[in-house]
Length: 265
Image (cartoon, rainbow, N blue to C red):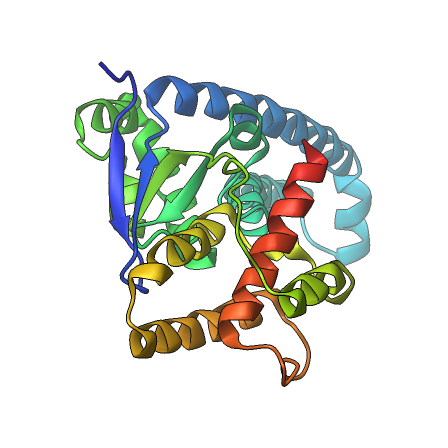
């Protein structure tokens, strides 16, 4: 019996990926860490804002505005900035860290879209804006527990799920040509292979598992489409070498990515 539920998502490339959902325990643990870190930021903000209030009479004298009116404006602005700090914490990290906050990264879970792609600004914003609603009377926790896909309101409206972070696949032997091997050796100098997320690498791995079973025209078409996407993700400059086919390019990326991940273990 599995303690954590699994979910199967279909990517835009018509590849089915299976992920393990994060579970209420992992999500609560990650949220606790994030709230502790956010609390530290908020305390620092309050100290700064208190110092501003101490100087309110001097500011009011310079601006010609009544001190009482100035205090009300400063307090109102403080509430607005506190909310922006609360929302911005989750939005900033989930966008920059591809669906992870410090808490999620520590617990090894992440937010992804329902097509298997990383969460972006629209999804992170929707989830963050609705977090106060989900936190109200633990509504989000109840929805996560009783929802088949473990979604809170923010997840439903943003079209996201929270999964266990994909671990690096075991090194799978892939026969590649000398041309691919030579290009793989130069890739770390040409781009940052970390731009390829674990989910995107899984799509690449699935391609090589299915490629031998595909007919030549279908394989050529699929390799061409996937190569264009991978080249865009890695932001590789210019065109590929003439002696390097799309399939060989993908094999080089696969080899270089695995080698980099293995070096870090």
